[in-house]
Amino acid sequence: MKVVICGAGQVGYGIAEKLAAEQNDVSVIDTSPQLVHAIRDTLDVRGFIGHGAHPDVLAQAGADQADMIIAVTLYDEINMVACQVAHSLFNVPIKVSRVRAQSYLQSHYRNLFSRDNMPIDVIISPEIEVGEMILRRLSLPGAMETVRFADDNMIIVGIDCGGDCPVLDTPLRQLTELFPDLSAVVVGIARDGKVFVPHSSDMMREGDLVYVCCERGQVRRTLSIFGHEEPEAKRVLIAGGGNIGAYVARRLEGKQSRTKVKIIEHSRDRAIRIADELRRTVVLHGSALDQVMLQEADVEDSDMMVALTNEDEVNILSCVMAKKMGCERNLSLLNNTSYPAFAHALGIDAFVNPRQVTISKILQHVRRGRIRAVHALQNGAAEVIEAEALDTSPLVGRPLREVELAEGIRIGGILRDGKVITPCGDERIQAHDRVVIFAVADKVRQVEQMFRVSLEFF
Image (cartoon, rainbow, N blue to C red; front, side):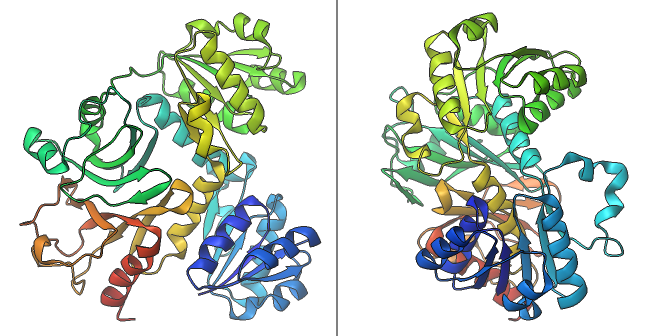
């Protein structure tokens, strides 16, 4: 696949890194010579210095032969114009744009991005994607990560195995025997910096991050089995009243929940603005690193501290301070990809990486075949893929025990006619089933080819 990426920042670099590693033909455009030189020196991609919306620059980058353009510069308008130029002058089939300003995304303006107006096939809104992920974490505080698939019928839950986890040192096959009616499958384990698909004889160890695919109604029971029975957060303190913080507060108010929300915002003008917009949320002007301010916000009585400022260091420190002052749990926004490795050691219970969320959303449209959703885990070390099976798929019609899946691939669940089916040896996948698959990074191409070759006669 030939891909042109406009923007060589964190997100653009991450997408280029992922696509180049999978042997795609990638060109990256950015106005910064430093970023272009850096991406040329470290990745197997072509770099072009220039404006991503200018026709001559797009032409140099090979837009006339591109299968996809991904516009992820810092400016919405440049992203949108780049997609328009790619469509009008170069007839690029798939156009993806990051759009952050919520004004463009209001429902009564939905025709703006139609083919007759501004032809953008996929709109990525990081604030909304990250905000929704945070809301899911608030509803399931015992989970390190939650990702929904198959029309929200199946959920991949990342669960931290602490020293008090009841199922430590228990073979996975024994879990099935202990809980035969549990619609859940352990699909992956992150241990000592590596991610792998476990065998039935493998056991979970203290410190493991276990990924479980389960039916939506079984999530809380699954968490309980792993020793996590934390109640839903009812008193939430948010550090940072930017787009994401305001979105989370607005959605909590809209759900008519009993959750009490307070926001600490450093900018006085921004604090006044969001205080006028929100109805029940208490907005305080000050620093989330000020102990007096945290006391004024009743941090010691809060169930969850959610740090969403633009500075990772502020997010980490405010979460640590809040916990030291009595807050039960915390969640931090972390943009720097090197921080998650030691965040837990610093006292961060859970974190969200906006870059990873955005890349996952884009990968859904990069993957070939009948791919409905993709989510990257552990900084790209593994992916969860939801795909649709057609009549010609090699998975269809055969008992799963006869299907030879490569090491590093596991089927987590099957959705058929709105019902979730837990995979077992006798189960047979049928045409039009939606299959949720966990795969380590070097096996993703095999999953893609498995669906693409058989389903689409590539």
